[in-house]
Length: 217
Image (tube, rainbow, N blue to C red; front, top):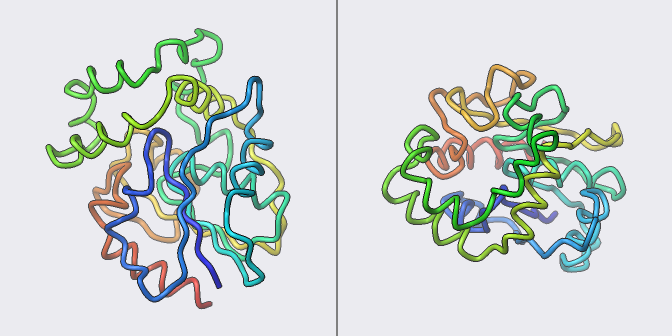
């Protein structure tokens, strides 16, 4: 069995580094540059193709946009389980703030410069500490503006694919997630009380325990 972890929009594999999965074979899939006019389904397959070839069963763990991409991967590949962390499984779970991105073309303004310069305003509201703010700035600094704008647009227009019934989907979500609000999502399998959108960092111990328990079932 192998575990592939896919980070959220603008993040990289460091968002998972607090998890304790040392007993398992793990691989991180960091973001690649999207092709011109590439849809999220094709992008997801191209990203998955960068993973090491393997014959054993595969479990995908996706944070935020990484969870969305995990579902796109599973719609075209044999995946044992998906664990969604602070993510969505249907368009109705997207908040209004994302749904207006395309009509108002807000993705034009979503650059790494904007994200870094404005984090003083939105970071604390979304649960960022001084330490996670520094980490976020480092992670988003690695991304290109073309990727960020594509990803923001892709998430805001996403419609869930048909994932085979043979792929089990488990969900982890924080009650204080203000990016993808808890009140909009289907009841999670693990509820992180007062957990923010980055609870995978702040509550890594309980999330690790849940993952280890459920990947064996």
